[in-house]
Image 1 (tube, rainbow, N blue to C red):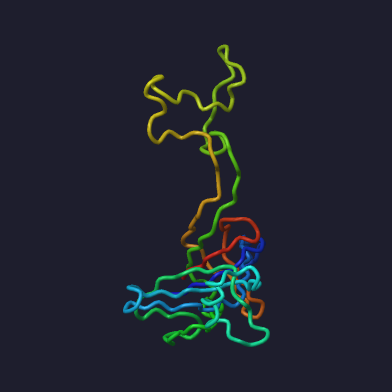
Image 2 (cartoon, rainbow, N blue to C red; image 1 turned 180 degrees about the vertical axis):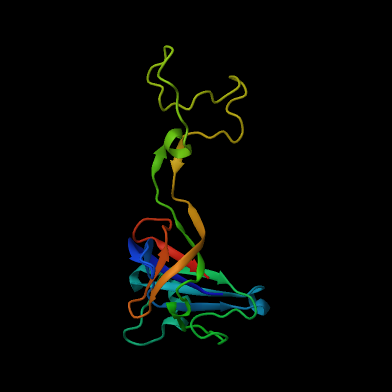
Length: 218
């Protein structure tokens, strides 16, 4: 299993060998650091916990400082901790990081060298928040016609209830908060990998705005 954390940068386009243009999303993946290795004997399941993006010490709690101490080390330039921490479930035989089959331990780094162009991945991120929106934008309602005596009803939802006592039926699509949800896009292709720059180019669009934390799984 391959996985890594990154930050969504921007979208651009690349050309394949046949000269066809392909839209891609650029993801910056600074080295991910293993902060905890969970085992079936101790924790009941196997997982790798990853820390990403250095965090200032004054922004960490006392518990976080103690948790990150084993993974960051005691060097003068070592980070105090990480801003993002995510956990990935693994199974026996999964290849973690660039060294396939190697036993990973706390403090080891994971980079994008294990990803290759053509790999099929799934990407998870938090979608853009759009605030409170009506049914036309949120659900794609057509609205009402401006005819037969109707006025100012182009974007209204229409009937929402069978009566005053029953109220809106269960599951009725109505206006409300839109976006800000965790979204996973499957079957995306890795177009290009730049290990030196820490960049990975994924075909198509992925959820979120620029600067959104992105989880990539292979």
